[in-house]
Length: 88
Image (cartoon, rainbow, N blue to C red):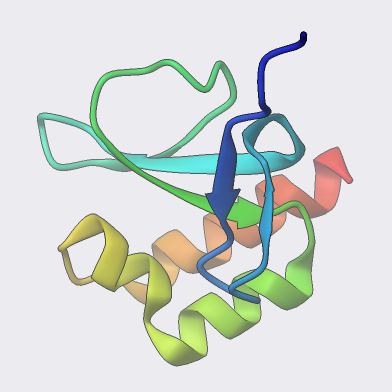
């Protein structure tokens, strides 16, 4: 009997995936918004698919801001999209 995968919902497309398939974006205890590539950093986390479309949807529907309970500046979205574009 294997363990169930840890499912998380993408804040862009609202579909559920194994958390290892998603990118974790966190609000650090200091209030910074950063990508958490380890999936283990301290802070409030939100998960998003590793594609630009989902980031655009999350930006439009404010899914990331709602999940992290903080207003997200436009330049942070731009940085996150650049990060995803170079990884993907």
